[in-house]
Image (cartoon, rainbow over all chains, first blue to last red):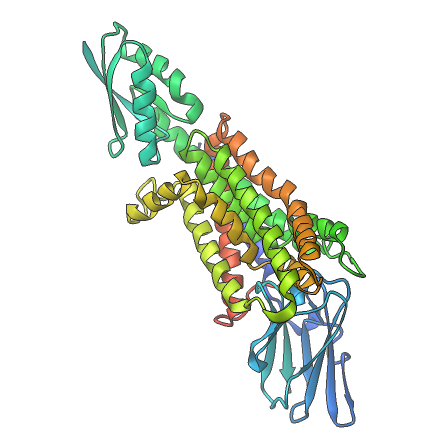
Length: 132
Length: 335
């Protein structure tokens, strides 16, 4: 009986720790992000960021420059999951995106040190745009 | 005429008292039965000339299919009950971990390009039913079904009503969306709040299934449970919960609602949403009717506790995700 309880606790602990590690937001770790700042470009004084929404948002963290008018392009491609229901609270944007297409969202002129955060309608996926 | 008092295990609800009393009173030779839920005892007046041990076995035979048993000694059943949670905890957590692995693996993110037809929306429904939406809708279905199975003897009727409510609301509201077009938007905030309420219901029901309230570790006003119980027995309630699932936050449902909006006519909106709801039906039906069949097997205590652990996990996940969606807390998950 005692042995069973110990085995159970160990298994449960491992499962909980594993799951939390697995699903927790690892955005604090910059090593994991490959495509950083490759997805933004400046054209005619306007900074464009492209994020793909499908089964999450990619890249997860984007670093951009501050003090420039900035537009976010969210690209969908057969996206029917939660990431199609996009909410960006800081600019009051909420919309269910077309399954396939591009949505251009005006982020205004973000200041240095700001973070623009987008989440999906259920809050399960998210992305950050860090203004440096 | 003799009076015997037995210890009873498996009593978890006010309706158990009525059920046990009615069932045992039907037994020939039993004059009267009184169940004391607080003491977990059953007192019987009987004309039968049997030993207490034999009586306990005879009467247990009548009620064991519903998860109750009578015993002369108290300890034996208590021990068994306490042991179940140690089996249920890893099982529930393993299922929970499996759910997250499936989400993270990305196998559900295959593309369905082009326009949405009823055929594609059926497939999207199939995918949705095992996707992250399962955390909210599936978790709610599982917690309600398991609770209903635990409490009532005829558990199939409320489940059929629930699924009927879900299908009808998707058909009718899908049609309405198609008919009125893009004039109305579905409020994100409203669906998120509804999702948070659903996740709280899941957590409470899940804890109840695990047996936290039963052991009086947490004292909850009994009014809450008797409220749920009253609802369960009303025909309209499961139906309305089914209707309500239309508004629960689920990316797939919302995408389908948009597709229905832009479909342009009542009939096309109706077909899209119906096909989607039918696509989600196999998984949800499995959850609810699976609960019912488990509930009548000898693994019932293990099932209820495992389901409880799973539901609490999913409810917590949906609750935190909902708060993140509302912008109240920073997102904790990125699955």
